[in-house]
Length: 266
Ligand code: HH2
Image 1: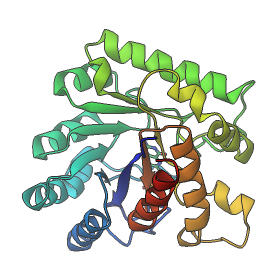
Image 2 (image 1 turned 135 degrees about the vertical axis):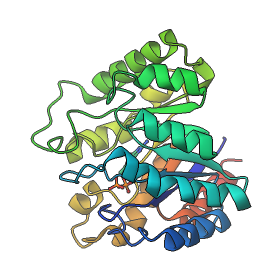
Image 3 (image 1 turned 180 degrees about the vertical axis):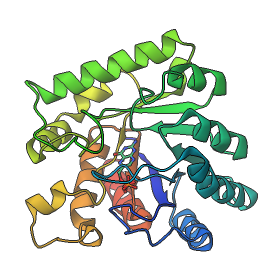
């Protein structure tokens, strides 16, 4: 069985939930990127705007000023694949010009009317993620009749829309959007049925690392950096379902867990 690629998260924001903005300083972000590369990251996911509930929106120019120098610095010293975590076509454009090759969009190219056209024009890979509602209100009583079927149908529709606009099929990744407009039960259903999303025929990326539902399952893990064991459990669940990549904060630890998993299943 193939083990998933590991995508390491590098936030250049003052308000990300998972790291409390400790990496806003450009030098600190570069140090973190280097550490994740050493830890075995296949992809670095660079984000300049937090998507957590209640996060303050960041102007386009500010987001570009946060991410582009970091992408250029990483590109200057490593061949690691770089993805840009943004909803904004202008930020994706600037990031791709600086060396990113993947546009990771939590809105699945819906934030801007130009999203799909921009992705087609850039010719980069795109991650289409499911989110119910918008970040500010998405955790206010989210409801589904059948979360797995509805997330699958949404992602299939977004992939069709992207392809109709000229995005090549082989450039598309899908992501269930764990924690984005989902209760704990919804997250667990999606994790238990990842194979249904993998069966859509696109590579699937799973982002469960350090998310809040892990604390609901183990209240002793209050802070994001106490959620590593739960994050590893989710990553291994993804591996067993043949996801193509896991988006994580603790890269070296996840790489080790996946190595052991892959050796067992070799
Ligand atoms: N989760 C977050 C951000 N971007 N992208 C994808 N494709 N999948 C995810 O699950 C995902 C994502 C939220 O996590 P984090 O980046 O740690 O927090 P913040 O958005 O506050 O920076």
